[in-house]
Image 1 (cartoon, rainbow, N blue to C red):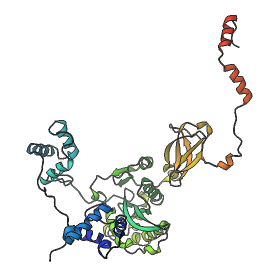
Image 2: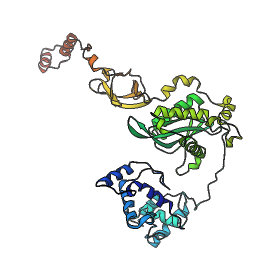
Image 3: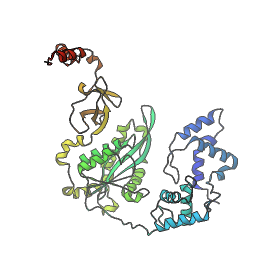
Image 4: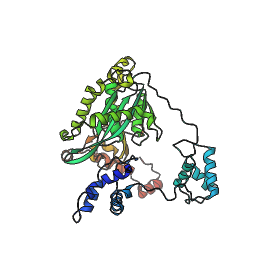
Amino acid sequence: MTQIDPIALFRLSVLGPLISRPLQRGEFQQTLRELAGRTYAIPGSRRTRLSDKTIAGWYYLWRKDGIDALSPRPRRDQGQSKLAAGIQETILHLKRENPRRSLLQILQALESTGQVSRGTVSRSAIHRLLQRHGLSRPAGAASEPEEKRSFVAACAGAIWYGDVMHGPQISLHGKRRKVYLVSLMDDASRLITHSAFCLGETALDIEGVLKQALLKRGVPYKLVVDNGAAYRSGSLQGICARLGVVLLYCRPYTPESKGKIERWHRTFRAQFLSELDLRRIRDLDDLNARLWAWLEQVYHQRPHGGLEGLTPLLRYQQDLPRVRSLGPQAAQLDALFYHRETRRVRKDGTVSYLGQFFEVAYALAGKTVILVVDAHAGRVVAVESAAGEDLGRATPLEREANAHRQRHQPNSTDTAVADANDRTSLVEIAHQQYYGEEKA
């Protein structure tokens, strides 16, 4: 019996609600929208969403030719190139000459030398040609294979890994919300220094987990993370710099760079998510409470095959004298995680942050200031100038209290005298010049 293509089986499973029963009028589009709103483990892809047009296209293919039509169709021009023979030779020469040349660099070389007109050759065409000749990257067949060796850090705290895993959907305030598991792992001990389910995978979520890990497990010397925008945020880079942590980024398409935490994700799915009863989960705090209990009672207490039979907790405790503590910085840890936001003070002496208004010194009205904010608590801590000078506090705006507050008014008498002395009058100037009087 011929084996059915796994991708065809996946597509058929997606179509299940559309083909399992006759649909009533208008039900097709409604079901399409529901299917497009779900998340999927798509074979051979890191994406988790499908568009309604894609699902509809699969549906009509299935209606016409059954499950065989759901198998991926090879390109008709596979193994061929529409590029001119001379252009093909130039592309292959450029790649062999320097195997690290990217598709964009090759394309720029062709366009800058006038061999092709701008916009007439696509990078995908170049990629297919290189792939057919075994020269495409990241496969790396054009150069010597990169040496990769198994290693372990010398001691706990030497290297931490950070990563995000897509989690399940839970019900929050009557709505289904997807959660993300943000985790930090110690290389030498495999200990999870901290982990938490979050509603996103932003820099703020990652910083929140890092802050708790620092409080519980000390300060690492190196932190290895993904290349994503959240990890490249200026706030995270600043935190690591102030703590003396070297922040390292994995090269794209090299998941083996942090294989230990990737392997832990597999363990987590098999041992935690498979046993999790989502019907018992009331909110995000409830889910995290179960996560933390499982980490401390199960994962950290279980002998690990890569630790010569030791548990992650025991292996970590062996190196406690070598773990770098926060020391005096512990008292200033909140300040290390403060963000800075640029704002222009309104005419009424207020600034906005996260949809709320705060009052600052009225003398700052119309000026640009830096708000020092505790992003995790959603509050403004202080106001600074661009040079870091303290400009006072920011307090929540109380409009009702302001209705009864005595406002500062300039001294009217002083103002009148000043105006009289400073006023420029052509008549007075002529009088002074004609009679030789000097202005008092």
